[in-house]
Length: 107
Ligand code: SF4
Image 1: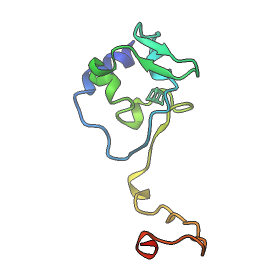
Image 2 (image 1 turned 90 degrees about the vertical axis):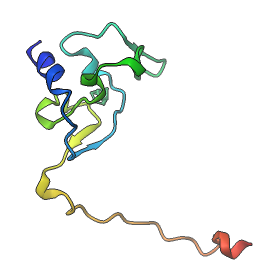
Image 3 (image 1 turned 180 degrees about the horizontal axis):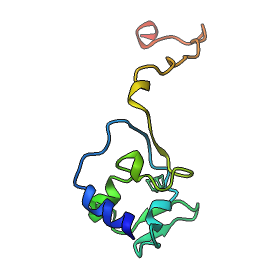
């Protein structure tokens, strides 16, 4: 309950710019500290909010900062250390097969 109160008040502050990832709809944050009455699950077991457009800032911004991420095992969001930003390995790309033409070449 103490964490919920803390998140309520700190939700007016911005989301940490070091946050990465996306919500995978695990629904775990919607159970803190008890299941939210607006929490629903679809046929595939993915969570959804019955009042999504009107949900409070503490839900919109979860997890706002690493210290407030109470569900790191399942949450799709994660935080990178500031000194790690810009040091990620460059993405690799698959070579384009020779038989695929670009738009300019096909016209
Ligand atoms: S814990 Fe994270 S991934 Fe799961 S529903 Fe909440 S925000 Fe989405």
